[in-house]
Image (cartoon, one colour):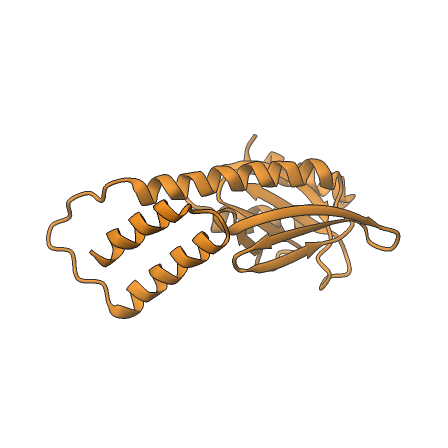
Length: 182
């Protein structure tokens, strides 16, 4: 599956046949993806701040909400701690994504249970990749500039957040912290 197929599928599910919106969504995604980022799944849903449905795009790195060519609302998969689905009479199937960056609610999500399962699996893989990257020995770099105190503090706070969320065990947290401090 490529990015065009992913966007087309999501717009079909949303019932949006506007080719200009599809093209804008595709341009937005292609402009914002990392070189090694791949498409995983897509569906349609509505963000509570928007009246009409948009597109939820799941990649190997993050979840994106796209609507009408506006900047995407991204959620990094390595930060996702939970994804749950509830059903309401007014908002249909509601997908609640809890991440270290906050929670994100999407309403009227099409096939929300299936999408939530794909999201949980992709988030699990992203967290495992993050752990492996933390555990990998750092390559010997020629006289790298010393990190500033602010950089070190940011990295330590990120590690603490991952540990608190359960993404890192006590042992992994201690090793990663020791590697940062030196």
